[in-house]
Structure formats: structure tokens, C-alpha cells
Image 1 (cartoon, rainbow over the protein chains, first blue to last red):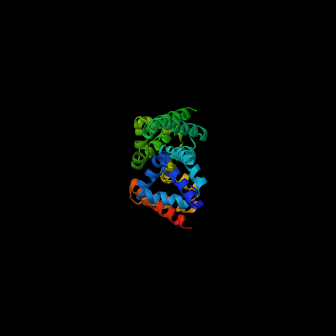
Image 2: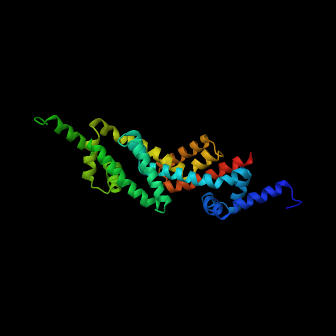
Length: 133
Length: 133
């Protein structure tokens, strides 16, 4: 890349990251669908929002954020904000254990819907156990 | 109810609450489906878990918990834990405003899916605005 200025080099490095298979599959394609924009538009947006270092780290943070999002989704779909927060019939520890188990199962290949179904049955067991005391 | 002991009276009052239309529609029927149990089983569970006062207040808390759950679901489905928490390209205030607006729209009759679709477009606008600075 002799003769290129620093900006152009940086731009090529940014493009290389964002054009990678994992980036396109996990971030660019699904987001551009939701945003109803082209892949190019979204790539340009990411270029102007993030510098090279952030782009490099981004895919890793996306993975862990996905887990956190899924954890929150189980919380909502199992109505745990009600059972744990308002009613206090499920302990925060039991709720956390259940949600983390379900997230693990989805990461190991189970569908979200199946894990949710199983989670509801386990929640029922926890409630029955609580009712016995 | 002359001649009945206190327990029996209480039990009738509990039953009256839990057999009400709103209770059955919003809580008992959907939960029993998810828990894969009969309506009777679930009613008995609620009887043993909660006293009369809690049962009376329960429907109101269920409604507000539903809103909180939906708010959390939008957070997950819009990947806001990533955009706000990790990347810090959306401010917590903007995220909160967006989520509360979407929850309101669902409460006013829009489907969750439609609100989510709209929310994604608005998120894209927020990101583009951020990219300009």
C-alpha cells in the first residue's frame, strides 16, 4: 500500500472487517433488513460511527450483548418481573438460574420457543414448590 | 353465610376474585396454557400462594408488570443493550423515550410486531443523526 495516505489505508482495514463473513451474517444483514436500508448504507453508517479499534472489538461485544438481550427476553416472556419483582414468590436467585440455563440451551442449538416452553414448565414447578411452604 | 366458619368464607371470597372474567382472561387461562396444567390446578396454586388482599391487588399489578415486560422485550428486540450499553451511540434517554412510546402504541391497539418494525426504523434515524456529529 505504498503511496496511499493513512486515511485510505484505514478505510481499507475498516472495510476488511465489516465485509467479513461473520460481520455480514450476524450484524450487517439482519440489521439492514430491520432498518429497511441497503447493506452499503449500513456499512457507511458503521464507518462514520466507529473507529477501527471499535470495529475490531464490535463482533465480540455483539455476541455477549445478544446473550444479555436473550436473558431479558426470557425475563419478559416468563413474566418474571411479575413473579419475582411484584409477587416475590420466586427468588431472584432461582429466576437468574433458570434464565441462564435457558440462554445456555439456546446457545447450544435449542430454539428460543422450545426453551421458553420448557422454562414455563420449570417456573410452574418452582411455584408449586413455593406453595408447599 | 351464617354458620360458615371464617376459612370457608374467605375461600368463597378468594374464589370470587379468581373466577372473575378479567382474572380468567388475563392471568389464569394464558398461564395455565403455558404451565400445561388445568385451570383448577392453577387456581389452587394461587389460593395457596396468596392471601385475599394480595389476590385483590394482583390484577392491577399484573397489568403494570405486563408493561414493564413489554418495555424489556423492546429493549431486547431492538438490541438496545448493545447500542446503548456497549456502543454508547444511543443515549439512555433516547432509548427510554423510544421504548415508552412503543409500549404506549401497543397499549393503544398496535400489534407488538408492527411497533417493533417502526421502532427499528426510528432506531436507524437515531443512529444516522448520531453519525452526523
